[in-house]
Length: 231
Image 1 (cartoon, one colour):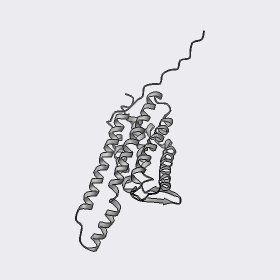
Image 2 (tube, helix red, strand yellow; image 1 turned 60 degrees about the vertical axis):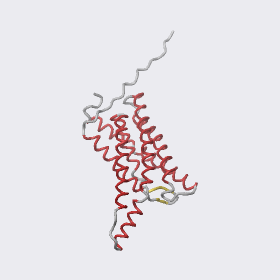
Image 3 (cartoon, one colour; image 1 turned 45 degrees about the vertical axis):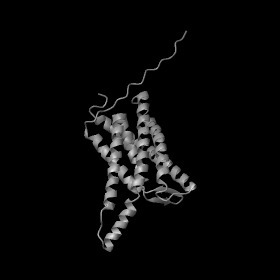
Image 4 (cartoon, one colour; image 1 turned 120 degrees about the horizontal axis):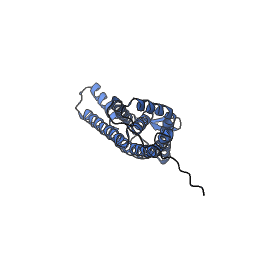
């Protein structure tokens, strides 16, 4: 009688503790990308039949950095990074509101500058609401799925973890963001809205897929230089 085959269990997932400068650098980059994306997203962009916003080229970078943080440091640290970036973006939005509310110069130049600030930064609070809720939900799901997959596979299947978590995170992110932000940037009809959602999801996911080799190489580079990784 033959016994059933047994397969060796995957090694337990390894994570680094916060202590080196790498986490701080990545956290700062994630926060800056999120803040700049919120500003850029206030502008609707039409490239041929493609409808998007001015932050389209920036936001996927925050998810790529999020993948690196989740893989190297684990879910608790990733959650800390997400909440910190969230708080800093709220602070930036508050600063925009104060700057716009401050009394300006009464001459023609001052009135022109005030109108420009209101036009560029005025819609940002609504965009920030959309971006922050989307970022909070999408990044949390992205980090949670990546870490759960790592718990099953150990150090193997990194590419599958990055790609699988990205699809789920970007889908949730795009649905939430587009639903809130679309009216602010002038998207009001159903056809244009569907275009906006599909383009946003497909574009951001494809960018993350294209950058998987770079993300994987960055993860490997940091793992080798984090003294506490797997310790």
